[in-house]
Length: 267
Image 1 (cartoon, helix red, strand yellow):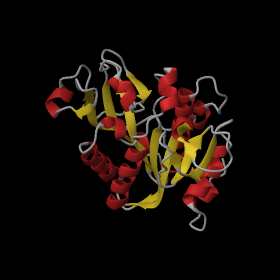
Image 2: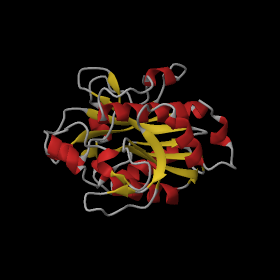
Image 3: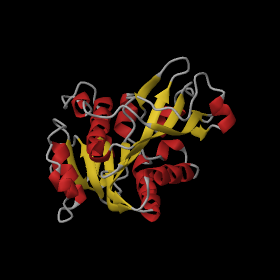
Image 4: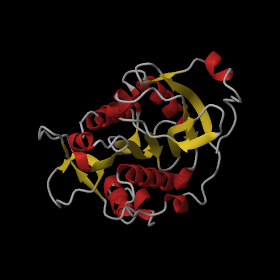
């Protein structure tokens, strides 16, 4: 991947990311666009809309959107708050065609916040994410917040009685409404991976495309992670409640989990 444009202040971050990602997605496109809902109402433009809509122009129907990326030159508390609302907006749109088709695992639209630089440390970002998560149900949360010069904060799932299984994508409201609450622990984690952050972002988008359209030909995301450090720091643990939304566990609950160690480093 050509990474020079990502650090060039004369090139808009959204343009650099869209050009870089387009080579990885097979039939999917990455472009700045508005998203169209089932009532033909449109959102504001998003920096990068990852989709498989065959129409080369115009707004992208939500049924065709696998993921969106909201880009910022510098991440601040105010920008993070605004991005949360924008992610919530697109995740609130119903993917009606897929609901009718019974696509239970393809109803989600992954949402990422990506900044070139940040006025906040990764620890401060993780703290703000925890605060903002308390304001809306988990099916509206961003799936990850990344700073290309520092690292990424995202989620990992732990199945009781097993090891950490890897990255976790937040389920859509339609999925949680029609399914029993899963017996898993979801951990918010910090990965301080510096310039490899874009690789992690790309791998998450590729994985979300594979969930959105099983069998589609995309780049093997594992190739993007071959030089990735294996460590990450746990910052908060969540579990699903009876309303099928994630809620934070107390410190007492976390430290009574089998094998729990909030200070350990994860794969």
